[in-house]
Image 1 (cartoon, helix red, strand yellow):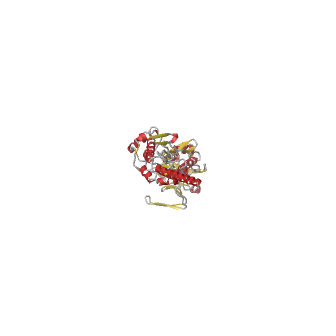
Image 2: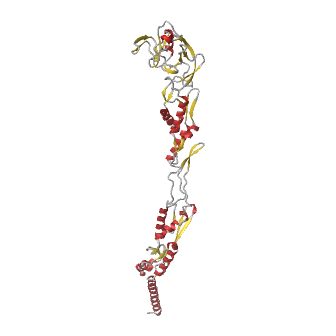
Image 3: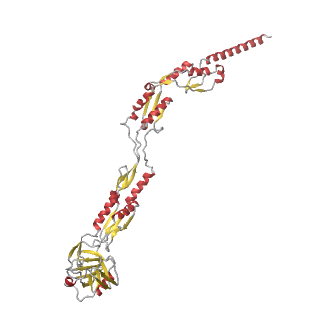
Length: 460
């Protein structure tokens, strides 16, 4: 073998020995150190011994800080020192190193290996509640409670006032979130993202709130007018505004009692049934009348119900009340221009049509000396019926009297034709009727053809 060849063989042998030396040396090294690229719980433990890795873990535990993000860019922290947190060696890092095969160190080169161990830490969990309660964001005096979106009365109607988020936190939920973050060694949490702030129950986008606003504003557009010819009563925007009141629960409601008061006041001013009224006689004198069954009476309950419904629907119209009793003329002078006037003292009767006298006749009224036969007076009655011909009878007085024109206005008392030898004057004092208004035939016929059922009859 040549000298050159011997030298080459020796060199090769030396290289192999060197390589093997390096390999075995590295294997020995990685029997005590973690491979390069090893991560333990996210920390770089490459080329570290178990002791070094534990020291790094200890430092990380002792340096732990939980950053808490609150609203309005508020940042608060809870530190390991406050938590009395420290590292506790549980032997897991040594076990990880033992599980590492040092002979495969070449295969691990350029690779990253993520390992996980129990953090092996201790802390005072009982102190977490106290630490949370000491946070600025948990200060009751600094907390602003959330406000629900609500309706507000404005000059133009009703509008939605948006909700207010505030900054009040759910204390128990915050404590639970911090416990979990500390348990998992999280570095930060956001109270907003975790949904720990108390929320308004009602937002401005709430359909129910919008519908209620529309309903209230619709009520404000209503205008209900009751026309009594010479006067009107109107429930308009300004009036209805006073009917919409606070419901005691942060909202508004239509006060039906206020609508009822409106109807009551209208009825008080316009009802005439049984009310005293001043009447101007044929001669221009004024007499005071109170009595009879003629006049108007508003059905207050039904009228109120109809008014409330109209307001709720935003109705604009002129309408009539609902009546229990009705007269002929709706103006202040409810007797109107077509009526019958009877003067007991003058023994005279007038019939008016549209304000013009069409009958002026003497009559004979009830026997004045007998209270049971006197003609009722001092009031206004309504014609109850019309019948032609008719037969008037009385079991009490024992008569049966055929008549051609019969117009009762007070039970069995009415206006009718009758044949008599004399009229007017003092006849009624000694030869009066049984209470009716006896009338000459031709005059009774005109009156019969003029009046209607409900036409007023004034007797004084």
